[in-house]
Length: 388
Image (cartoon, rainbow, N blue to C red; front, side, top):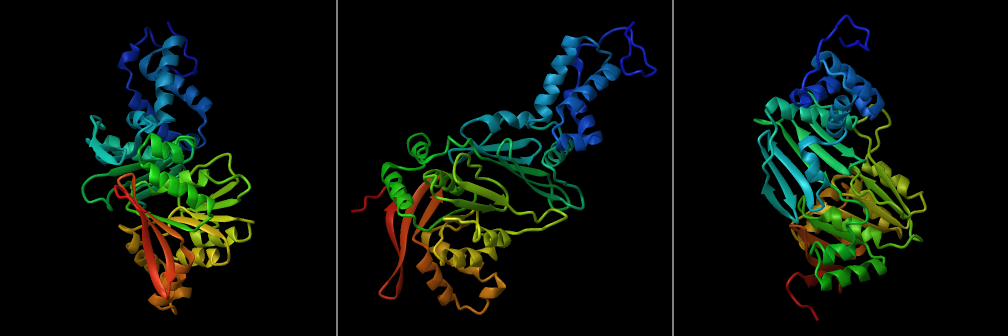
């Protein structure tokens, strides 16, 4: 007869087979009842709870069998289950769960369907809730959208459920690779994002300490290239990064990284506020992960005072990047008095280069300047073409 170590009024006569243990049911039980410990990544607490659960439900007390189950549960609960191997894959940059049985990954700028699926709609919903809890967030009927940053695995996580999602819950994970992987040399030689000419031009742009805007659609490689450019700076250059959600994750450089706190109940700080603080932080270079609104005015006002600036923006060509920036610039109430022509003058005076990304490839580079009172973007590089 087994001795009940939990002092409950239950006795068991024999052991169950560990192969019959439902790992997912254990994870659901733990995340439902002990979410606050999940947030704190308290593994010791969970080890005790797992032992208790499998002893009481499955009649197992063999130490080796218990350790096997604990290992499986911890691997899933502190990782990302069926998606973990794709997160770990060096070439996967994005995961897109369209519905519980339809999952895609992006590698080298191309989407492909994979042979993975969640067991049911409910299983995917539980997984999304787990992602939220794991990263100190909430997703439910009242708050049906999730955006979170997992700093351990360097992920940006976005998810939606009903009533926002019309038919199916969804999950999108952006994977930011380790700090040493995405540098300019690897983007040229290994990932083929750059050819030799683009590589050499970018090296010169960094040396010239120019103001740079990287444009393209979502998932085109903007953040990856931004990260690689920042790694090129010497440690005697001070850099301050402001992001909506942490995505750059750069170590061993003279870089301070900050993110907004709009979704928190206290001290709500947006990108505009972060940028204002950057001005008093002895920064040589100001970086905004992505310009989306009112902070655009503050960013260009800051680099107009002598700071170097690098940022990204959603746009589908070199020239449309300017139009997009004008639109974002005017969202700041302080810019309402400015005409579109005046804002364009500010942009052309304060942007040195625009880089256009598409499908994880650098497609073109434009030099921005005013010549004889005419705003000009001169294409100095286009993929597949030769420039004198």
